Length: 259
Image (cartoon, rainbow, N blue to C red; front, top):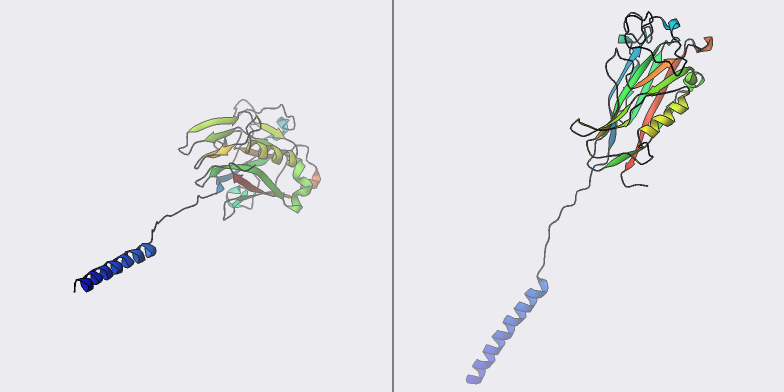
């Protein structure tokens, strides 16, 4: 009797041990974890354009790169860069503003101006903002000029004003390029525009933290500069009549640590 009782106890203990072993082999460790990637996006924003005409452009030599016309100087009979009654550019366009179109993805600007005459022109301004959550940098600004504008693209002077880097809160972080520069060819203008919006003067890349933006200073419509000035040269010939200047600017950007 004692023997059978001992065997029963041993058998019960063995079953318990088997259960524990089975539980040990089937137990699981579960860890829940979520990984979310960042947003990589740079955009054009606050894109604006306005025409500027000359009341009496014959009194000035705008073709001279050293000429610096006054801003609304009453003593000067040729007061340059006026708007209103003396502005005949885009006469068929409501408001006579240039046609400036921002693409749906905000990474391409189309600029079109019609009915130019020597001494007239327009300005264009925009910001480039890091609209993502990770640092990024401009690789280059690409341009595509309309084939119909190819023959007249160098009958204009292109001016780039000072370039300023802003923090996300709108505070000035640094003036990158303090002086404006004028270019006699479209290709030279685009090359320098791309350089100034992607590199510091020493050649190192401009890295934009999330929310930061670059802006080529443009003030109000009565000032000499709106950011990027585009004016037809006084020397433009008759072949430039009834022509349209149209081109696209494309934003090509990469992440901050790309080489």
